Length: 568
Image (cartoon, rainbow, N blue to C red; front, side, top):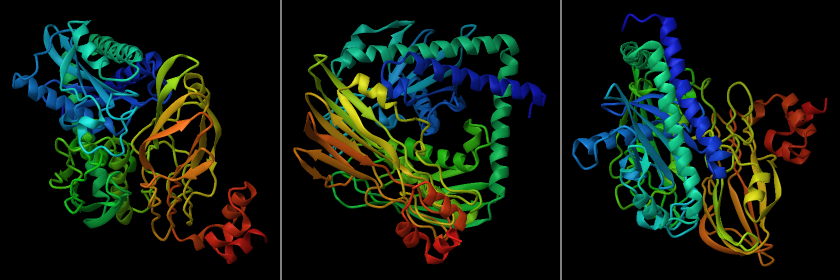
């Protein structure tokens, strides 16, 4: 430990996070796409100059990027050392979305900027933004039936998009020639680059206040203290081996579930996660690259211990056995469009289901566990222009020892929120006929799960193609300690006066729709916590008064005795 006092450390730690927060805010405020500007599907962070280890990440950024951005910065550093990528210079910004180099799906595009102090590399700044389209076989990139990564879109190795502050027009031309609605991406590109420039400026201000020597010492100590803080939390978990499993509905190609099998071992102040019993690599796009698998474990543990500050030290006490030979360690050319938004949440679910056995007072039942990825691409005759709309939705969180689960919470792996329907209707030729809570969708329990959402969107004009990569349509989010599962995801297409559900339930692509056709989605409710028969009758009565359940539904879920108690 250094000799820095606690107050100085706290100020510097808050200052580093503020740098990241301001990058997040600048990115969203200046981005063109609603998925970034309104839904905040992005993240910013600061990374070690030599290893790429996480120094700080914005509290407004997506948790799933906590491990992937660290991993991809490390890969960039490795490739530079191997002379496979050009060495950094002031003003450079690298672009990369290769999932096998620490990425997620191809739509998550990373910008990396070196920061120099007195001519020497001091650190790296990186951000990730979800682009609404990156090419590929379907608008929006969420190909439910892809069997190789090239079908999912344009894959970019690390290259300098900006060289000494100037964008390389030739590289930009290559990118824009391979994506849909390319003329709109320049707004997101400039926003992404501007956020990094804001970060560099704010970091310079912090350096001017505390000095480089003090900042370097503080970064090291903050990391060490975070590691010790996490070890202290882990020591409270009883030693032992805990097993759990979670299931992905299907891979989108083969209509069979994929199993995530976790063996978690707690010994002393460390946790070991072994997924080696999981399903082998799959044909469809539900493979997970190893960086996303690692990051999913990190964010799940951080959910349980939210007070531990985020940096590389936070995850030092966690050992993850690389799941080679499974679909959680995707290698080229396996398709991966579902890894970040869907498989990651099943991994986190498996971690929750293991930890709830050990520390039931700290862990919830399973949350909705899907981002509800819905992409709609077409041509708007009123604007005489093509478009790609990307919609994400929340769902119910699981009940816990203290209370019912949250309704319409964001996905487990994000802070992203559904863009306002008014904004979506302004940008795209659609009308939301319904957007409401999916009442009654939470799993029954002593504390029930939260509710998902129910929306229905109609195409107003022209023709379009709809694609989905969602999950929890075959199995609802499981309850714990006797609680019931939440309601599963439901997708319905209302077309030409007929209604159908996709073969893979919540995965399909290129569904042709015309004006007047509607897409209906009901997201999952969270799992229940504890035996339903032990629920407080007053809580059942409250839910009945609010119209969440009919009396006959409440009787089926919680039993005649409790229902009688609500009427006394």
